[in-house]
Amino acid sequence: MQALADTPDRAAIRDAVAALCARFDDEYWLTRDRTGTFAFDFHKAFADAGWLGIAMPEQYGGAGLGITEAAIMMQTVANSAGVFAACSTIHLNVFGPHAIVVHGTDEQKARWLPPLIKGEVRACFGVTEPDAGLDTTRITTRAERGGNGYIVHGRKVWTSGAQHAHKIMLLARTTPIDRCARPSDGLSLFYTDLDRRYVQVHEIHKMGRAAVDSNATFFDGLPVALEDRIGEEGKGFRYLLDSLNPERILTAAEAVGIGRRALCRATQYAKERVVFGRPIGQNQAIQHPLAESWAELAAAELMVLRAASLYDRAEPCGAEANAAKYLASDACFAAADRAVRTHGGFGYASEYHVERYFREAVLSRLVPVSRELVLCYLAERVLGLPKSY
Ligand SMILES: Cc1cc2nc3c(=O)[nH]c(=O)nc-3n(C[C@H](O)[C@H](O)[C@H](O)COP(=O)(O)OP(=O)(O)OC[C@H]3O[C@@H](n4cnc5c(N)ncnc54)[C@H](O)[C@@H]3O)c2cc1C
Image (cartoon, rainbow, N blue to C red):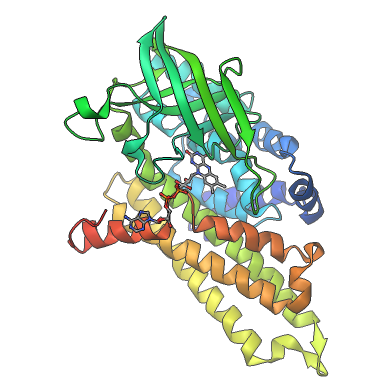
């Protein structure tokens, strides 16, 4: 059950990525899950093989390919033993620089992209705040003019990878909300050093994906140079919106991959496990849910590829990208749940790995946007119903 690839070049990407991932098996990822250690060697293997720049411009060392190729790659990574943890280990290098590519100056691209693509620099993403949640325009972290640019005070939450990141993509308010015409005005986007003299990072212990840390992050006077601001002051929220569709497409692709991995394990076990004198997979109560998962994942994958193809042709893809995220994360969750149940009691044992897949599948429904907010988008923007939030 490999990712769909409609051209020889795309099939070659899928096969090469699968071969690289196969060097990092279930035991490797189980150990990292238990110890909560970042997979530096996995990250380095992807950087050394040139994959981190798959969707970055060629002039800065990238491969200049589209979101379709990036989606095939991330689905393949997710369909390996590392599931979501493996994806998150490299996701920010692959996708994080999107705002830089689209809105950065030539000087910024030349300064920032090559080290990310070579894997010399790891970045984290500081948008979510504890008191704002999904209502991003209500963030209160502020960047005030001072020094050679700005001084940042405030706090973020869930900043993944901040324990080891060198850089942060940071959204902060530069004009108080009561002086803005709209709440989405007055926010600015920065890409700057995560200078630990001014930033404290506290890890949040969580249900799954332990190999990639997530953190509460506190900013106490972080200086940010003027040249580290992306685009115009006050337009940061709009720049973030540009990244939403490709991010939804990539996380949907990852969800399809995790679901496929879980389904594959479940099918294998259903063929091997004999109870009541026959393989459990001979029972329709075991077969049908697995067959349903195959169909659900295949349908979600087609929506992912449709959204990616529209995006790469610069056509509107909001409906498809949101539908892909919704369908893929639900299909992923159902497949992982069925994989645990197919294993019976052993599904609860770490050594069978499906419980780890399940814990990571839960996350696919929560990030980067919840299924409720995706449905709000479809209801409002596609069906024309009144805005509800
Ligand atoms: C492991 C992990 C890693 C993350 N990594 C990062 C990261 O690196 N950087 C970063 O910036 N963020 C990160 N996030 C944050 C993530 O992207 C979500 O945006 C964030 O968790 C959502 O905010 P919240 O938890 O405060 O939810 P809330 O906004 O409090 O929402 C809670 C629930 O209410 C629902 N809800 C809220 N409003 C409405 C409404 N109007 N209608 C219907 N339902 C509604 C939501 O769908 C959700 O189910 C991460 C989160 C997790 C769990």
